[in-house]
Image (cartoon, rainbow over all chains, first blue to last red):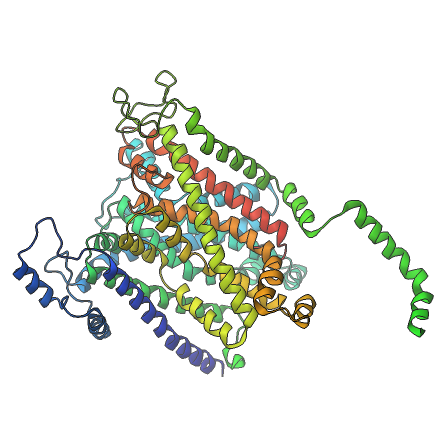
Length: 314
Length: 310
């Protein structure tokens, strides 16, 4: 019964994603096309015949609306087209090259944020209104307040330049080069998750069933792990969707500062160079990633929260 | 007549506590706002943050006029010179000899201005949208909120970056671009509040008196949303300042000779190995401001909206 309800809900939600994606594609497409200049407006002015040939071969000479529908038809087949800026590369190839790098940094950051955030939040909740609580939460507020583009140069300065413990940037897949970007990216999320966990954990710890669990003599460790943690991390789970979106956009800056060849750096460069297909490719690809992740988070939330039953909601 | 008698009969016992309560009320004269104000004053972190922000505002507004340097003056004898009292560059200078302290204070004007104006833009859009959706309800509400849901799922920062690339880096555009993507939360919160407000007696009374929808929203609904809105505004300001500095850091925000904390941090990051002061001072001002605004917002929420904790 319940399985069926979840499945039906999942299918409905999945269909609901299509308009979101369509709006995303439409806004991004017309926005980038409204930008003055085009992909072939470089330093040297091309002879008109060559220019006309180029425009024709990329269909840039067609009316905008026709190009839009052509683009829609094209991405349904999963083809993002050739990049204007990186000659000989298709956008699909660029994404296939950049995304694993971004995903490694982002994925590690979100795992780190989840583990440390819930841990810190739980500790603060258990020591509510003590010096430990106040100092931990003060630091967490600092984590939310310091922008990551401030943290990153400071970390490079302290850890890489002065202390010389880790390399300052670049990317070769080794862990030494991952440490600083991952920490920088994770910090605000750690802080936010710690605050969320603390708040909900305090509420849960005051509930009757926790009192019952304690009254029947369970050790505190088990009370927390078995009874309190699951309901207390529910708000954190629903934050994971927005958190991944924030990490993805945050990585635009992180990738630039640490010179990491990820997708974020392609996006900014692409937008500045009017590389229409690359910009659209990154936006659509990340749009899908964020939407799918939100969808998974939703299902996860339902699975963790016994109060939500989709078959009853019908 | 009969009911009057009854009231008079029981009046003696009931009247006393009421009278006492009213008398007490007169003495203290406590409205909801005064109450909230008292709660806020008890929150040490928020009070200290408020004082620091007051000082910051004064510094940013008056500071550049009192200092011996102009923001765009290039002191070629002292390029990238460290903070010192002798050269009168208390925070040092940047690569072309501009005084970091003046630049930081002037950048602060822009950062704070963007914070306030862009928040105002998101406030106007969000409150109007949310109040209309919540008040009319039904199909209007469903369609309007569905639009919000869809827009919510979009990666915002990409749109802000695209907007800046498309329309150029004009300061008015920064206000609008950031404000235009920040109104969604406000619309959701306001809608929820309006839904519960619109069924209250005073709104029904207004409707019975023949007041039209427009006036009811403007005169009765929106003033009652003020508490929630104020809380949300204080929490939006630091977010907006952060977005602006993020854009300026990427080189997409305010343009030279104007500057903001984000742009200064970006400049500082280029020279940080030889001249860390070019990075540290603007970064410090930016962080302190965001830190204080977050604490003030937290304090306001606790004071005005005791139910809805993070």
